[in-house]
Image (tube, protein in one colour):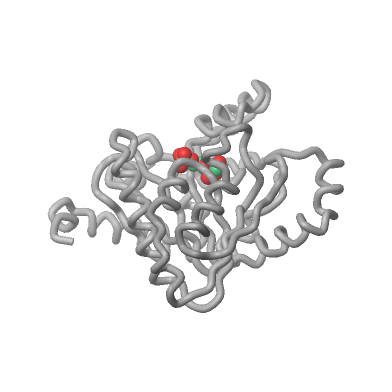
Amino acid sequence: EMMKELAGLNEMEMKIQKRFQLQQVVVVPGNSDESSWVKKELGRACSSSIKKHLVGKNIIAVTGGTTMAAVAEMLTPEISQKSENLFVPARGGIGNDVENQANTICAKMADQTNSQHRVFHIPDQVSQQGYKAFINEPSIREVLQLISSANIVIHGIGEAMAMAKRRNTSQSECDKLIQNKAVAEAFGYYFNENGEVVHKLSTIGFQLEDLMKTKDVFAVAGGFSKGKAIQAYLKRAPNSTILITDEAAAKGILKEI
Ligand code: F6P
């Protein structure tokens, strides 16, 4: 705590919380672009914050990405001492990057905390026809039902173009993102610098409407490179958001645009 005060982190936490009207903000020292231990610290900070919010029965929806993987690493069985938790993936997976898929992360989170989890076996992007067939599958319906009744969400935030690249997005769709000035991405939605949705993947699972009625939303993202993306996303984020970020991103979040 004393270190945090010296670095002015507490002040940054307060400023961000006020400016974007968030439930809570935690800023860890450093820049997760540069050192992997800072990403681990984001995971640790998220883990200890979640612990304080878990009572009774919870359905926890989680997204993918390397930051979420770091959160999973840092969760401990202590979390389930006073609560019964079910982890569900917020959405389908991305390409073949199995390690960072929501399904894998969910299983890991359940494993680390002696909790239950469900898997969601569908591609991240499906056709209209495929969509209709999928949502009528009983096993899919069950998971979809759980996802939309999640009372807790843990999600990552990415830079729009970095995410488009990771998803092997077609040139024409990339052009559309550039044209619409997309800067941020979270759970399949792309946002411009004003926090307006400019593109959305046709995915089954967690939707922006679901986010608005979720009791506690943990948004975990850091690194100098993500400052602008996080700032944009926060303009749209619900007041239930608990932001876990790092010092380098926090500076970008507080920059005027
Ligand atoms: O693909 C899942 C996801 O949570 C995206 O919504 C987000 O933009 C990205 O991962 C963040 O990934 P990382 O933590 O690896 O930067």
